Length: 313
Image (cartoon, rainbow, N blue to C red; front, side):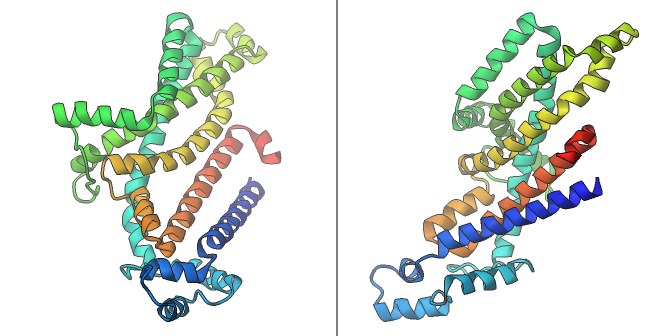
């Protein structure tokens, strides 16, 4: 297990390094153009050249990347080109917002999807048909429409939750819960549909195996067989789908944060991209890459725990 974990950690570090090189190459190519975008079209060539030198953009791209990487490994991603704030400071105040809704949506998706998937596989008939219908609706309806419907119904008409903004958990737990509930629900609908289908298929496959019939012949109740054995075997594929959904939810958070006016990484990315604030964009890219690697590593370790054969893959 230790060798498996070390191998996965090294693979994750390599992936982060590759992503950083690709992102840096794409964002920093063309130093003169970057300086002109910052100064505006009316800037003189001399001013543009001076700005490029000031930012170090006149140096070879490889030298720029190595300097950036050497600082980044210590947590120093530089400063914003527009407000001078440390990138790490900008990120630290935004990560909690995005993680609140993405992790919340992942947990909600996992709980509801597993319940729906198992119920559909066990009961069949009308229950299965209803689950299939709900899944299709979840696939078909865009997330932003669900978000708008939730705001109109539960925030504006009923006043149960906040329509916009974010309240830190340290300020008020009730306020935090009110501010993240609707974004979490809006973000999780599509994921529930996907994961529920995967769980349903995995449970149906497991229920047809010989070991289930053997356990049933020994007098074990179906509920005990499902909870103790079937879910253990069906959990691996479901976890893999959940990991993919988590990555998709980070992308979906960009839209949800805009709709609910939440100051998360998505909103920061949109603002930084429109300004051409590349240090901020690089910081967001690396932060998201690290989050994705950590989540994948966690899922891999969970799968290896559920199924020892995974450790040899």
